[in-house]
Length: 486
Image (tube, rainbow, N blue to C red; front, side):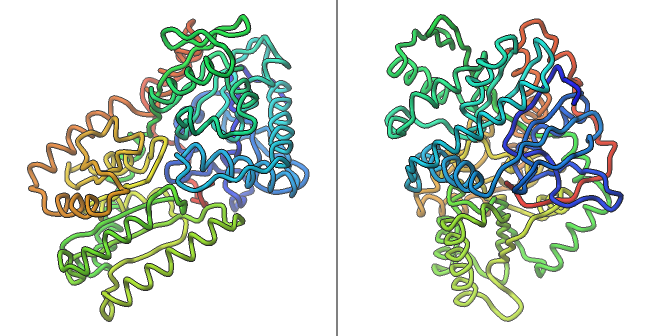
């Protein structure tokens, strides 16, 4: 494989799981997913993406996607269980999301996680040009920066943590806490969604590594690592263009008709995960129905839950609980032809999402903990006429930027009920003022601005950032098919 001056390393390749009719590879997009975040950048910037293709066994041979070259990494069935389902998603994921669900510590998972991270690092070392920039993504690959520095000390290495990074008292529970911290700090620049995460890492580096911290720098073992907050964003231009497309506008009107032309539509779009607060949301809505504040004849809730990690037992249990609760609510409060909640456990395409965003009167984004939550930003981008209300969890990274949303503590069910009612009953002029301010912010802080800020901080020469367009260009390819979020 040819070498590249920019290499992205992520757990998954940005591919649809099924081939297009003509055999070509297609870009895979997910609500709030990494592929969505990087799509507008790598569509225009030649690079190599190192990642897992999604199956078990030998890595497949894959063609390029435009100017993006693909370098697949193989996983065995045992590695999938130990590295991905085990250490990444049953140990790190819950711990990094404030231990909302108890993390599982399994010594065997650690060895598999380390072996797979080494494989990713070796693959990147193979495809990177001398002096290239390598951008490592997220908690699945936290050891890769340190491993890659040992293999290729000539490289410029960046690491970005898309999920929250926990406070020291939680992180200290990890049996392999020092190795994980050293691995991440093998990068030249470690980026987070919020400043608090960078502060947490600095505290840990001082405590566990004896590091010296000053002005977003961590110095230990003769090296200085820079840290900072770089809130990830979306391709605002793409979502705005989708939302105004005639077929999407027509689809939105049809959706409203299919829902029975209700007075109000509440919408939630989540990956099926216990961090998303779906059960708390259903409880709050159920009590509003019970107490008569919401009537099925004029209000309907649409809950989209994109399938996720279906091989993991705790996720299957969550799906069963949510489906059972939706059935209970519809059985108690629904009427013939008028369910209280429309529940959809399936993936949605980009145009379908844009139509849903246009249909909603109130977008309810209430995760218990989230690194950012790009769905909230997509909803704002889709509201071209400035209408609509956004109910947003204080514990989503997006809350720091979208302060004009109706902010709420999703753990407080009574507070969530009151906030939902405020959003549903808000004056149109108030909603317009809020939405206008949020739209202005995301337009000025879109995906290109995020990448430019991060890559400028990584490479002070400006070589990387100068390769990016000033704004996200409209896609020249047909819209890719949506697959389940990963």
